[in-house]
Length: 204
Image 1 (cartoon, rainbow, N blue to C red):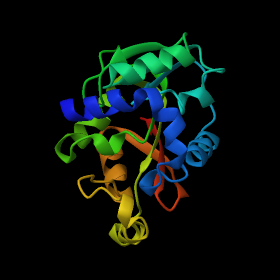
Image 2 (image 1 turned 45 degrees about the horizontal axis):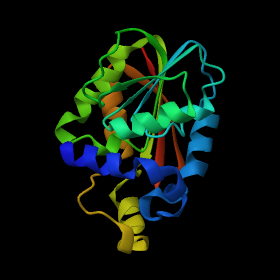
Image 3 (image 1 turned 90 degrees about the vertical axis):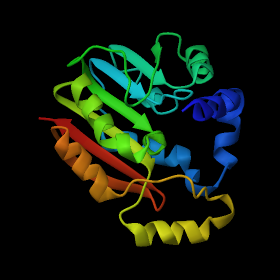
């Protein structure tokens, strides 16, 4: 985890400048964020972004939310978020360790972060999301992800030079199972691009 933190700490200052040109599985980053927002544009009440980075996904919601929180493993990323959005309350943490109140959030968002969770901890990560959501609250999760292995292999072949074989991107059936086991009902799964998956799920 420390190496991931260091990676994003080192990237934080240049992240917004570089993200559009990085290519590979992050190709279409901003377009996918806008599409994921359109899939669930409601943000009344308390909102949390997990893996907030520099705040590019939560930026779509901040004008309509009452209270906005952000969690990230990278203190430097949180510093960049605070520069852009001083009103956001930030905490250091990750999908499995979020030091915030249970049953508090109307909406939890996350973009391009979940795949960093180790496979053995992904089920628990969804349970942590469920703990934080109010009954009826919604998760809007956007990430690099695929319907099946064949789709991922096609993407891997296309972006071979920028592909990181150490990353384990989620498949649709996995996200559905994690959500179901955590007490969430999947309302929608969309593919903003051939590289990205968007899950909308509601706490039962």
